[in-house]
Length: 283
Image (cartoon, rainbow, N blue to C red; front, side, top):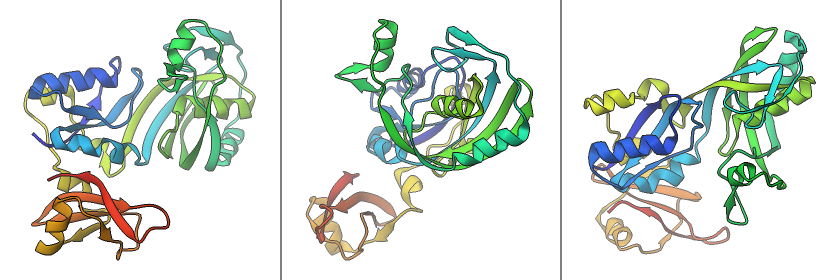
């Protein structure tokens, strides 16, 4: 069993819970997910099985698209409606101001990681610091907001669609948007609608999967539209043994296909090198 299943994660379970269901269903421990969704969140969660677990790092780096709902007037410790309310302040905003602020976030900025996250500081996860009541300086990460669109607006809530780079926290983005508006609010709902090439229409519920109603994307399905090169027998013999090759492709990475199957991903040896080395091997 080697491939990727796109799960429509339900609300109220963790991404790890989904992995456990898949492990049990297919009787294997070689399962990984490609980007954590909070328990409150739903939608696209790519699950890699067998040899496809080598794709976890590759797929996690893909852009993601979300539809987020925001409830105004309260602030919680987790930045979503699952947390403990720490502040309340009813303040009305207008649609024009909201549109201007949303558009101002298009581009890159340094985003503060939320305290309730699995990011580690000195070997300890941030949410463990939060639960122990320990103050810690929260790290910042450079993220990119590639597209943002207002879908719905009310006096006490709004909904937007956003496409973001790897590592972007939507809870933190909402906090930053509200701070710029001069109000407080939290994420009340989040649905991941796309990750890389996978759309929500490609996703199956856990119930579907339990009943055998799902599609398994092969490693070749996942990678075939990317930076691929079809190779001959001679180059195959070099690659299958993990040999270095000349970077005649002038790219940072190349996916090699032999007899209609992806056999390896190679990457530039280093930034100044004319050679390429194995990155992920599938043979």
